[in-house]
Image (cartoon, rainbow, N blue to C red; front, side, top):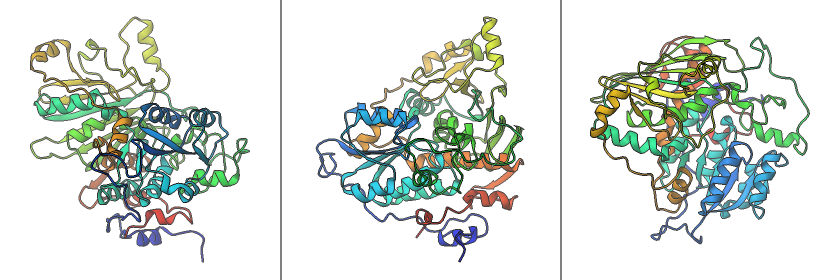
Length: 495
Protein backbone atom coordinates (compact mmCIF):
# COMPACT_ATOMS: atom_id res chain seq x y z
CA UNK A 1 0.00 0.00 0.00
CA UNK A 2 1.28 3.47 -0.84
CA UNK A 3 2.72 5.51 2.02
CA UNK A 4 1.03 8.57 0.58
CA UNK A 5 -2.58 9.51 1.16
CA UNK A 6 -4.18 10.60 -2.11
CA UNK A 7 -6.19 13.81 -2.27
CA UNK A 8 -9.30 11.78 -3.14
CA UNK A 9 -8.85 9.54 -0.09
CA UNK A 10 -8.12 12.60 2.01
CA UNK A 11 -11.37 14.24 0.98
CA UNK A 12 -13.33 11.06 1.58
CA UNK A 13 -11.91 10.40 5.02
CA UNK A 14 -12.37 14.03 5.98
CA UNK A 15 -16.07 14.00 5.12
CA UNK A 16 -15.55 16.30 2.12
CA UNK A 17 -16.94 15.73 -1.35
CA UNK A 18 -14.25 14.82 -3.88
CA UNK A 19 -15.58 17.27 -6.45
CA UNK A 20 -14.73 20.79 -5.41
CA UNK A 21 -15.03 21.69 -1.74
CA UNK A 22 -18.35 20.90 -0.15
CA UNK A 23 -18.43 20.79 3.61
CA UNK A 24 -19.60 17.68 5.36
CA UNK A 25 -20.43 17.35 9.02
CA UNK A 26 -18.42 19.37 11.46
CA UNK A 27 -15.51 18.16 13.55
CA UNK A 28 -16.36 17.00 17.05
CA UNK A 29 -13.92 17.20 19.94
CA UNK A 30 -12.90 13.99 21.64
CA UNK A 31 -12.62 15.69 25.01
CA UNK A 32 -14.55 18.35 26.90
CA UNK A 33 -13.80 21.93 27.73
CA UNK A 34 -12.68 23.16 31.13
CA UNK A 35 -15.45 23.39 33.69
CA UNK A 36 -16.40 26.99 34.41
CA UNK A 37 -17.48 27.51 38.00
CA UNK A 38 -19.97 30.20 39.11
CA UNK A 39 -17.06 32.11 40.68
CA UNK A 40 -15.44 32.39 37.25
CA UNK A 41 -12.49 30.20 38.24
CA UNK A 42 -11.28 27.13 36.41
CA UNK A 43 -12.06 23.90 38.19
CA UNK A 44 -9.35 22.91 40.65
CA UNK A 45 -7.27 26.07 40.13
CA UNK A 46 -6.25 28.92 42.35
CA UNK A 47 -7.23 31.95 40.31
CA UNK A 48 -4.78 31.48 37.44
CA UNK A 49 -4.93 29.71 34.10
CA UNK A 50 -2.54 26.78 33.74
CA UNK A 51 -0.95 27.69 30.42
CA UNK A 52 1.40 25.74 28.14
CA UNK A 53 3.55 27.76 25.73
CA UNK A 54 4.03 26.11 22.33
CA UNK A 55 6.58 28.13 20.36
CA UNK A 56 8.77 30.26 22.64
CA UNK A 57 11.25 32.07 20.35
CA UNK A 58 10.83 35.06 18.03
CA UNK A 59 7.13 36.03 18.00
CA UNK A 60 6.40 33.22 20.43
CA UNK A 61 8.77 34.79 22.95
CA UNK A 62 6.96 38.12 22.72
CA UNK A 63 3.57 36.51 23.20
CA UNK A 64 4.91 34.42 26.08
CA UNK A 65 6.13 37.55 27.88
CA UNK A 66 2.67 39.08 27.60
CA UNK A 67 1.10 36.07 29.27
CA UNK A 68 3.83 35.81 31.89
CA UNK A 69 3.54 39.50 32.79
CA UNK A 70 -0.26 39.38 32.99
CA UNK A 71 -0.19 37.80 36.42
CA UNK A 72 -3.14 35.62 35.40
CA UNK A 73 -1.26 32.64 33.99
CA UNK A 74 0.65 29.84 35.64
CA UNK A 75 3.12 28.60 33.02
CA UNK A 76 3.24 24.84 33.51
CA UNK A 77 5.04 23.79 30.31
CA UNK A 78 7.04 25.13 27.38
CA UNK A 79 7.40 23.36 24.06
CA UNK A 80 9.63 24.11 21.07
CA UNK A 81 11.49 21.84 18.64
CA UNK A 82 14.55 24.09 18.92
CA UNK A 83 14.83 24.46 22.70
CA UNK A 84 18.57 25.19 22.56
CA UNK A 85 18.03 28.31 20.44
CA UNK A 86 18.87 31.62 22.12
CA UNK A 87 15.28 32.89 21.97
CA UNK A 88 13.93 29.74 23.59
CA UNK A 89 16.53 29.84 26.35
CA UNK A 90 15.65 33.43 27.16
CA UNK A 91 11.99 32.46 27.59
CA UNK A 92 12.87 29.41 29.67
CA UNK A 93 14.79 31.64 32.09
CA UNK A 94 11.55 33.51 32.78
CA UNK A 95 9.70 30.29 33.72
CA UNK A 96 12.38 27.93 35.05
CA UNK A 97 9.85 25.68 36.82
CA UNK A 98 7.89 24.93 33.62
CA UNK A 99 8.43 21.45 32.21
CA UNK A 100 10.19 21.41 28.84
CA UNK A 101 9.21 19.50 25.70
CA UNK A 102 10.20 19.39 22.04
CA UNK A 103 7.07 17.55 20.80
CA UNK A 104 3.63 18.93 21.64
CA UNK A 105 2.13 15.44 21.38
CA UNK A 106 4.39 14.13 24.13
CA UNK A 107 3.57 17.19 26.21
CA UNK A 108 -0.16 16.48 25.92
CA UNK A 109 0.35 12.78 26.65
CA UNK A 110 2.19 13.56 29.88
CA UNK A 111 0.50 16.76 31.07
CA UNK A 112 -3.00 17.01 29.60
CA UNK A 113 -4.55 16.95 33.07
CA UNK A 114 -2.43 19.90 34.21
CA UNK A 115 -3.14 22.20 31.25
CA UNK A 116 -6.12 24.53 30.87
CA UNK A 117 -4.99 26.42 27.77
CA UNK A 118 -2.17 26.71 25.25
CA UNK A 119 -0.33 29.43 23.38
CA UNK A 120 0.36 28.42 19.77
CA UNK A 121 3.01 30.72 18.27
CA UNK A 122 4.72 28.58 15.64
CA UNK A 123 4.84 28.73 11.80
CA UNK A 124 1.49 29.24 10.06
CA UNK A 125 1.32 25.79 8.50
CA UNK A 126 1.70 24.06 11.88
CA UNK A 127 -1.05 26.01 13.65
CA UNK A 128 -3.81 23.64 12.59
CA UNK A 129 -2.60 20.27 13.93
CA UNK A 130 -1.48 21.78 17.23
CA UNK A 131 -4.76 23.65 17.72
CA UNK A 132 -6.74 20.54 16.86
CA UNK A 133 -4.70 18.40 19.24
CA UNK A 134 -5.40 20.86 22.04
CA UNK A 135 -9.09 21.27 21.26
CA UNK A 136 -9.62 17.52 20.99
CA UNK A 137 -8.49 17.43 24.63
CA UNK A 138 -10.81 20.28 25.58
CA UNK A 139 -8.01 22.84 25.98
CA UNK A 140 -8.53 26.50 25.21
CA UNK A 141 -6.31 27.98 22.50
CA UNK A 142 -4.60 31.29 21.78
CA UNK A 143 -3.09 31.00 18.29
CA UNK A 144 -1.08 33.57 16.39
CA UNK A 145 -2.53 35.02 13.22
CA UNK A 146 -3.27 34.23 10.44
CA UNK A 147 -4.86 31.23 12.23
CA UNK A 148 -4.28 28.60 9.51
CA UNK A 149 -2.58 28.20 6.14
CA UNK A 150 -5.44 26.67 4.13
CA UNK A 151 -9.11 27.43 3.62
CA UNK A 152 -10.12 23.97 4.84
CA UNK A 153 -8.16 24.21 8.07
CA UNK A 154 -9.82 27.51 9.03
CA UNK A 155 -13.23 25.98 8.34
CA UNK A 156 -12.57 22.97 10.54
CA UNK A 157 -11.21 25.01 13.45
CA UNK A 158 -14.18 27.38 13.35
CA UNK A 159 -16.60 24.45 13.32
CA UNK A 160 -14.68 22.82 16.17
CA UNK A 161 -14.95 25.98 18.27
CA UNK A 162 -18.62 26.44 17.45
CA UNK A 163 -19.47 22.88 18.52
CA UNK A 164 -17.49 23.15 21.74
CA UNK A 165 -18.46 26.48 23.35
CA UNK A 166 -16.62 25.69 26.60
CA UNK A 167 -13.34 25.83 24.69
CA UNK A 168 -12.12 29.43 24.64
CA UNK A 169 -10.37 30.51 21.42
CA UNK A 170 -8.52 33.66 20.44
CA UNK A 171 -6.46 34.61 17.36
CA UNK A 172 -3.47 36.86 18.02
CA UNK A 173 -4.46 39.98 16.09
CA UNK A 174 -3.74 42.23 19.09
CA UNK A 175 -5.46 45.29 17.65
CA UNK A 176 -8.78 43.58 18.13
CA UNK A 177 -8.56 44.55 21.79
CA UNK A 178 -7.31 48.08 21.21
CA UNK A 179 -8.53 51.53 20.27
CA UNK A 180 -9.25 50.77 16.61
CA UNK A 181 -11.59 47.92 17.58
CA UNK A 182 -13.72 50.01 19.93
CA UNK A 183 -13.56 53.12 17.74
CA UNK A 184 -14.65 51.29 14.60
CA UNK A 185 -17.58 49.70 16.40
CA UNK A 186 -18.66 53.00 17.99
CA UNK A 187 -18.36 54.94 14.72
CA UNK A 188 -20.29 52.31 12.81
CA UNK A 189 -23.06 52.16 15.43
CA UNK A 190 -23.31 55.97 15.31
CA UNK A 191 -23.53 56.00 11.50
CA UNK A 192 -20.18 57.74 10.99
CA UNK A 193 -18.85 54.70 9.14
CA UNK A 194 -21.54 53.66 6.68
CA UNK A 195 -21.98 52.94 2.98
CA UNK A 196 -18.36 51.83 2.55
CA UNK A 197 -17.74 51.01 -1.11
CA UNK A 198 -13.97 50.55 -1.30
CA UNK A 199 -10.94 49.88 0.89
CA UNK A 200 -7.25 50.22 0.05
CA UNK A 201 -4.93 48.18 2.28
CA UNK A 202 -1.16 48.16 1.96
CA UNK A 203 2.06 46.80 3.45
CA UNK A 204 5.16 48.23 1.81
CA UNK A 205 7.86 47.00 4.15
CA UNK A 206 10.54 44.60 2.94
CA UNK A 207 10.10 40.87 3.54
CA UNK A 208 12.71 38.25 4.35
CA UNK A 209 12.27 36.41 1.04
CA UNK A 210 12.75 39.49 -1.13
CA UNK A 211 16.50 38.83 -1.60
CA UNK A 212 15.84 35.25 -2.78
CA UNK A 213 16.57 34.47 -6.42
CA UNK A 214 13.29 34.98 -8.34
CA UNK A 215 14.41 32.36 -10.88
CA UNK A 216 14.72 29.59 -8.30
CA UNK A 217 13.63 26.24 -9.76
CA UNK A 218 13.90 23.97 -6.72
CA UNK A 219 13.71 24.03 -2.94
CA UNK A 220 16.92 24.82 -1.01
CA UNK A 221 19.40 22.00 -0.49
CA UNK A 222 19.82 20.30 2.88
CA UNK A 223 21.93 21.99 5.53
CA UNK A 224 23.12 20.71 8.92
CA UNK A 225 20.55 21.04 11.69
CA UNK A 226 21.13 23.69 14.39
CA UNK A 227 23.02 22.50 17.50
CA UNK A 228 20.80 20.45 19.78
CA UNK A 229 18.13 19.87 17.12
CA UNK A 230 17.67 16.29 15.83
CA UNK A 231 16.04 14.81 12.73
CA UNK A 232 13.12 13.82 14.96
CA UNK A 233 12.73 17.45 16.06
CA UNK A 234 12.79 18.59 12.44
CA UNK A 235 10.12 16.04 11.60
CA UNK A 236 7.93 17.53 14.34
CA UNK A 237 8.62 21.04 12.99
CA UNK A 238 7.22 19.91 9.62
CA UNK A 239 4.03 18.47 11.20
CA UNK A 240 1.51 18.00 8.35
CA UNK A 241 3.63 19.66 5.63
CA UNK A 242 5.35 17.75 2.83
CA UNK A 243 8.87 16.74 3.73
CA UNK A 244 11.59 19.33 3.18
CA UNK A 245 15.23 19.04 4.17
CA UNK A 246 16.30 21.54 6.81
CA UNK A 247 17.57 24.86 5.49
CA UNK A 248 18.10 28.21 7.19
CA UNK A 249 15.75 29.73 4.61
CA UNK A 250 12.98 27.91 6.46
CA UNK A 251 14.05 28.04 10.10
CA UNK A 252 14.41 30.05 12.20
CA UNK A 253 11.88 32.65 11.16
CA UNK A 254 12.19 32.47 7.36
CA UNK A 255 9.32 30.08 6.63
CA UNK A 256 6.69 32.74 5.93
CA UNK A 257 7.88 33.43 2.38
CA UNK A 258 7.30 29.86 1.14
CA UNK A 259 3.90 28.72 -0.16
CA UNK A 260 4.28 25.39 1.67
CA UNK A 261 4.73 27.06 5.05
CA UNK A 262 3.26 30.58 5.25
CA UNK A 263 0.78 33.11 3.92
CA UNK A 264 3.20 35.83 2.91
CA UNK A 265 2.70 39.52 3.59
CA UNK A 266 -1.06 39.24 3.14
CA UNK A 267 -1.55 36.71 5.92
CA UNK A 268 1.04 38.37 8.13
CA UNK A 269 -0.12 41.98 8.00
CA UNK A 270 -3.61 41.70 6.53
CA UNK A 271 -4.72 40.31 9.89
CA UNK A 272 -3.72 43.60 11.55
CA UNK A 273 -5.01 45.92 8.84
CA UNK A 274 -8.30 44.39 7.69
CA UNK A 275 -9.65 42.78 10.88
CA UNK A 276 -12.09 45.47 12.05
CA UNK A 277 -13.13 46.26 8.48
CA UNK A 278 -13.97 42.62 7.87
CA UNK A 279 -15.86 42.04 11.12
CA UNK A 280 -17.87 45.26 11.46
CA UNK A 281 -18.74 45.59 7.77
CA UNK A 282 -19.93 41.96 7.81
CA UNK A 283 -17.99 41.20 4.63
CA UNK A 284 -17.89 37.41 4.87
CA UNK A 285 -16.20 35.82 1.85
CA UNK A 286 -15.58 37.47 -1.54
CA UNK A 287 -17.25 36.42 -4.78
CA UNK A 288 -14.33 37.48 -6.97
CA UNK A 289 -10.57 37.62 -6.42
CA UNK A 290 -8.31 39.14 -9.06
CA UNK A 291 -4.50 39.50 -9.10
CA UNK A 292 -4.08 42.88 -10.76
CA UNK A 293 -0.29 43.04 -10.47
CA UNK A 294 2.23 40.34 -9.59
CA UNK A 295 6.00 40.86 -9.84
CA UNK A 296 8.34 37.86 -10.01
CA UNK A 297 5.72 35.14 -9.79
CA UNK A 298 7.37 31.97 -8.53
CA UNK A 299 6.23 28.41 -7.88
CA UNK A 300 7.97 28.24 -4.51
CA UNK A 301 7.83 31.52 -2.63
CA UNK A 302 5.78 34.70 -2.61
CA UNK A 303 6.27 37.46 -5.20
CA UNK A 304 8.17 40.68 -4.67
CA UNK A 305 4.99 42.67 -5.27
CA UNK A 306 1.31 41.83 -5.28
CA UNK A 307 -1.84 43.83 -5.95
CA UNK A 308 -5.05 41.90 -5.29
CA UNK A 309 -8.67 42.96 -5.56
CA UNK A 310 -11.37 41.22 -3.51
CA UNK A 311 -15.01 41.93 -4.37
CA UNK A 312 -17.82 41.54 -1.85
CA UNK A 313 -21.56 41.74 -2.56
CA UNK A 314 -24.11 43.95 -0.82
CA UNK A 315 -25.02 42.82 2.69
CA UNK A 316 -28.38 43.96 4.05
CA UNK A 317 -28.39 47.75 3.72
CA UNK A 318 -24.64 47.89 3.02
CA UNK A 319 -23.48 48.39 -0.59
CA UNK A 320 -21.04 46.16 -2.48
CA UNK A 321 -17.44 46.72 -1.40
CA UNK A 322 -14.04 46.16 -3.01
CA UNK A 323 -10.82 45.66 -1.04
CA UNK A 324 -7.58 46.24 -2.95
CA UNK A 325 -4.43 44.93 -1.29
CA UNK A 326 -0.90 46.16 -2.11
CA UNK A 327 2.36 44.61 -0.88
CA UNK A 328 5.95 45.10 -2.00
CA UNK A 329 8.47 47.78 -1.12
CA UNK A 330 7.80 49.86 -4.22
CA UNK A 331 4.20 48.81 -4.85
CA UNK A 332 2.60 51.82 -3.22
CA UNK A 333 -1.15 52.41 -3.51
CA UNK A 334 -2.71 55.65 -4.73
CA UNK A 335 -3.19 58.08 -1.85
CA UNK A 336 -6.22 60.39 -1.81
CA UNK A 337 -6.09 64.16 -1.49
CA UNK A 338 -5.62 65.17 2.12
CA UNK A 339 -3.98 61.89 3.12
CA UNK A 340 -0.91 63.66 4.49
CA UNK A 341 -2.92 66.22 6.43
CA UNK A 342 -3.12 63.76 9.34
CA UNK A 343 0.05 61.94 10.38
CA UNK A 344 -0.94 60.05 13.55
CA UNK A 345 -1.60 56.64 12.01
CA UNK A 346 0.95 54.42 13.73
CA UNK A 347 0.44 52.16 16.73
CA UNK A 348 3.60 53.08 18.63
CA UNK A 349 3.69 49.71 20.39
CA UNK A 350 4.23 47.82 17.11
CA UNK A 351 7.62 47.72 15.34
CA UNK A 352 7.63 48.87 11.68
CA UNK A 353 7.12 46.14 9.03
CA UNK A 354 10.56 45.80 7.51
CA UNK A 355 12.66 48.31 5.64
CA UNK A 356 11.88 51.71 4.18
CA UNK A 357 11.05 52.14 0.51
CA UNK A 358 13.08 54.32 -1.82
CA UNK A 359 10.11 56.62 -2.27
CA UNK A 360 9.74 57.07 1.48
CA UNK A 361 13.44 57.78 1.94
CA UNK A 362 13.25 60.35 -0.84
CA UNK A 363 10.27 62.04 0.76
CA UNK A 364 11.95 62.12 4.16
CA UNK A 365 15.09 63.60 2.61
CA UNK A 366 12.98 66.29 0.96
CA UNK A 367 11.25 67.20 4.19
CA UNK A 368 7.86 65.94 3.10
CA UNK A 369 5.52 64.14 5.53
CA UNK A 370 6.46 60.53 6.24
CA UNK A 371 3.90 57.99 5.09
CA UNK A 372 3.40 54.74 6.98
CA UNK A 373 4.56 51.48 5.47
CA UNK A 374 1.31 49.73 6.36
CA UNK A 375 -2.24 50.91 6.69
CA UNK A 376 -5.64 51.38 5.10
CA UNK A 377 -7.86 53.92 3.41
CA UNK A 378 -11.62 53.45 3.71
CA UNK A 379 -13.88 55.13 1.16
CA UNK A 380 -17.57 55.62 1.91
CA UNK A 381 -20.14 57.53 -0.09
CA UNK A 382 -19.67 60.61 2.11
CA UNK A 383 -16.42 60.25 4.05
CA UNK A 384 -12.86 58.99 3.63
CA UNK A 385 -10.97 57.44 6.55
CA UNK A 386 -7.24 56.94 7.02
CA UNK A 387 -5.98 54.19 9.30
CA UNK A 388 -2.87 52.29 10.28
CA UNK A 389 -2.41 48.80 11.68
CA UNK A 390 -3.12 46.97 14.92
CA UNK A 391 -4.65 49.39 17.47
CA UNK A 392 -3.97 52.59 15.52
CA UNK A 393 -7.18 54.67 15.28
CA UNK A 394 -8.96 55.93 12.19
CA UNK A 395 -8.94 59.57 11.11
CA UNK A 396 -11.31 61.37 8.78
CA UNK A 397 -9.51 63.09 5.89
CA UNK A 398 -8.94 65.73 4.68
CA UNK A 399 -8.30 67.73 7.84
CA UNK A 400 -11.02 70.28 7.06
CA UNK A 401 -13.61 67.50 6.92
CA UNK A 402 -12.29 66.03 10.16
CA UNK A 403 -12.78 69.37 11.94
CA UNK A 404 -16.30 69.64 10.54
CA UNK A 405 -17.19 66.13 11.77
CA UNK A 406 -15.53 66.45 15.20
CA UNK A 407 -18.70 67.52 17.10
CA UNK A 408 -20.62 64.56 15.67
CA UNK A 409 -18.17 61.86 16.71
CA UNK A 410 -19.35 59.56 19.51
CA UNK A 411 -17.20 58.76 22.55
CA UNK A 412 -15.04 55.68 22.18
CA UNK A 413 -15.02 53.26 25.13
CA UNK A 414 -11.68 52.26 26.60
CA UNK A 415 -10.67 48.65 26.28
CA UNK A 416 -11.24 46.75 29.55
CA UNK A 417 -8.33 44.41 28.81
CA UNK A 418 -5.55 43.81 26.33
CA UNK A 419 -5.73 40.86 23.95
CA UNK A 420 -3.84 38.46 26.21
CA UNK A 421 -5.66 39.34 29.41
CA UNK A 422 -8.92 39.11 27.46
CA UNK A 423 -8.08 35.50 26.57
CA UNK A 424 -7.07 34.55 30.11
CA UNK A 425 -10.14 36.21 31.64
CA UNK A 426 -12.31 34.37 29.12
CA UNK A 427 -10.70 31.12 30.26
CA UNK A 428 -11.68 32.12 33.80
CA UNK A 429 -15.26 32.85 32.75
CA UNK A 430 -14.99 36.62 33.27
CA UNK A 431 -14.96 37.92 29.66
CA UNK A 432 -15.59 36.77 26.10
CA UNK A 433 -12.76 36.77 23.59
CA UNK A 434 -12.92 39.44 20.91
CA UNK A 435 -11.28 37.41 18.15
CA UNK A 436 -12.56 33.84 18.55
CA UNK A 437 -12.09 31.33 15.77
CA UNK A 438 -15.64 31.80 14.50
CA UNK A 439 -14.98 35.54 13.97
CA UNK A 440 -11.48 35.31 12.50
CA UNK A 441 -11.83 32.19 10.33
CA UNK A 442 -13.46 33.92 7.32
CA UNK A 443 -10.67 36.52 7.28
CA UNK A 444 -8.07 33.75 7.34
CA UNK A 445 -9.94 32.15 4.46
CA UNK A 446 -9.83 35.40 2.50
CA UNK A 447 -6.04 35.33 2.77
CA UNK A 448 -6.02 31.75 1.46
CA UNK A 449 -8.28 32.70 -1.45
CA UNK A 450 -6.03 35.63 -2.36
CA UNK A 451 -2.93 33.48 -2.34
CA UNK A 452 -4.63 30.88 -4.53
CA UNK A 453 -5.50 33.62 -7.04
CA UNK A 454 -1.86 34.76 -7.05
CA UNK A 455 -0.58 31.22 -7.61
CA UNK A 456 -3.05 30.68 -10.44
CA UNK A 457 -2.37 34.24 -11.69
CA UNK A 458 -5.94 34.72 -12.89
CA UNK A 459 -9.28 36.14 -11.84
CA UNK A 460 -11.19 33.58 -9.80
CA UNK A 461 -14.92 33.48 -9.20
CA UNK A 462 -16.01 32.08 -5.85
CA UNK A 463 -19.39 30.73 -4.74
CA UNK A 464 -19.90 32.01 -1.20
CA UNK A 465 -22.59 29.42 -0.48
CA UNK A 466 -20.93 26.21 -1.65
CA UNK A 467 -17.46 27.59 -0.85
CA UNK A 468 -15.85 26.57 -4.10
CA UNK A 469 -14.41 28.25 -7.16
CA UNK A 470 -16.69 28.08 -10.16
CA UNK A 471 -14.15 28.74 -12.93
CA UNK A 472 -11.03 26.78 -11.94
CA UNK A 473 -10.94 23.15 -10.77
CA UNK A 474 -7.27 23.26 -9.89
CA UNK A 475 -7.88 26.31 -7.68
CA UNK A 476 -10.48 24.22 -5.86
CA UNK A 477 -7.85 21.63 -5.03
CA UNK A 478 -5.80 24.36 -3.36
CA UNK A 479 -8.63 24.99 -0.89
CA UNK A 480 -7.56 21.75 0.78
CA UNK A 481 -4.03 21.72 -0.69
CA UNK A 482 -2.05 18.49 -0.53
CA UNK A 483 -3.04 15.82 1.97
CA UNK A 484 -1.13 15.76 5.26
CA UNK A 485 1.87 13.51 5.66
CA UNK A 486 1.18 9.97 6.77
CA UNK A 487 0.64 9.86 10.51
CA UNK A 488 -0.94 13.33 10.69
CA UNK A 489 -4.30 12.57 9.05
CA UNK A 490 -6.35 12.27 12.26
CA UNK A 491 -6.41 16.03 12.86
CA UNK A 492 -8.42 16.54 9.67
CA UNK A 493 -11.15 13.94 10.30
CA UNK A 494 -14.67 15.37 10.29
CA UNK A 495 -17.25 13.09 11.85
